[in-house]
Length: 400
Ligand SMILES: Nc1nc2c(c(=O)[nH]1)N[C@H]1C(S)=C(S)[C@@H](COP(=O)(O)O)O[C@H]1N2
Ligand SMILES: [Mo]
Image (cartoon, rainbow, N blue to C red):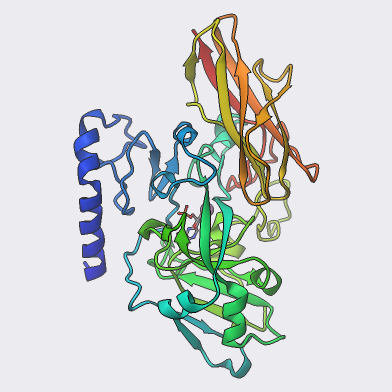
């Protein structure tokens, strides 16, 4: 075991200790997704108490009902974690970023220390990070279709206030040339091995136009240094794009004057299936549109009482325009009240009151339309890896 791993496990044990004591007795007995007794996934540093997270392999999904008590920015201790392997515990003093490749003047690699980045002008902005597979489980449960990948419900999303430097500023300082076409950030976490194939370190190219637009190299999340699990010391934030673009634990950036690819653009994160060309769709970029209730799937609600239903809605294409709710399986729809001013790259909280009369099973639906006219369909066209589930989710409840 490497010293870094030793340290990671030690930190994890220290971080998880109070949680273990608190939840050991209440640990869920469901085998497939149950947390280890410590309440933490083996490859994630922060505590993962079962009321906040559902552990899915190397990942942790935020439980949507637990977001009810949070504001527009998701606290780091509630924020979902998507790890291809495991969280590396890095130090900032021996960290450096290497920018290199054929798209630099002189083609000489340029290095930046953590201090170098900290001394460049900073920007602060809100952005959601949402996995392309968010909602994937509903292909199976709602559409009866088989897909591969982590069976997220709707909690593979979080919004935070990110502070860092513009990637544009770093690329200009590194001497990006006008012939550069693609820029590929790469993480320092372990190489990703799947089905016996080593895909190398997690990396995915961005076209220069996006890299020079609104991408940031973030070193703070919600006013604090990035937590280990979210990319300490520096991660990429690519607003409105699928989560995989936002490379954590950034180590180097290749700048190229010829197009770049990686398994994360050729094999993963594009759409394959009957509705798509044999080679798949183009690599996925911008996220889609969704809404979710802050209510457990299968919740019990009392008849004859007014319940304040709450949830969130978001679109990566434009600010949210309206949210409609149906409490009768889709026959009738009512406008929800938006609690926040919609912005690009964020989400809005909404509320709607419901006084159920009869008892028995019911389905709650929420559907969002954004200001560009994008809406949620009744069904999402199938793709084999279950990306981009944007259909209206039928949220089962029981009225008692
Ligand atoms: N280096 C590295 N970066 C990564 C990943 C990873 O496994 N390794 N996962 C990606 C994916 S698929 C997503 S959805 C987001 C999740 O960010 P979070 O864990 O901070 O929520 O990080 C992305 N960046
Ligand atoms: Mo992801």
